[in-house]
Image (tube, rainbow, N blue to C red):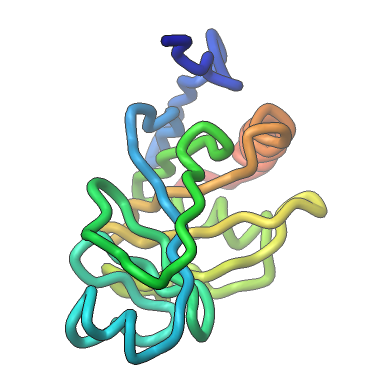
Amino acid sequence: MLKPRSALEGKAKFEMAGLALSEAPDFTLTQIAGDEKTLKKIFGKLPEFGVAKNNVLRIGPSQFWVLGEVPAAKNCFLTPLSSSRTRILVEGKQAPMLLQACAAIDFGAMKPADLVMTGMHHVPVLVHCLVEDKFHLYVMRTFALSIWDWLVDAAGGLIVA
């Protein structure tokens, strides 16, 4: 079976004082959509919009992204997204400041498990706060290199204290 190649192959490492960017490969991501009643049977208590719970990210009223193995899901629509997304890790004390330079959101106010869908460089990006000052960015594969370059350029303009 063919293994997808990284869209960031050879470029996925950047470090400076208080900031590190890298690709976070080898993940399984599936979108699951269905009616609320069916989804509650699958996941139990559903996470609120904009919050992740047990590797389940609610991205819309009846849409979730599942990281890792997907539970049995009858009467739902499943869409594998793993090979269509690139995951970028942004971490360090300067991470919220870098992300704020790229999108008009207060990333410093995000708590662990919070997520937000935003746009960076005219590209939709899902940002998931893992812990304080550590974020995963899920970017469409076709725009991953463009977003990577955008982040690195923006990092060059940060004033490091």
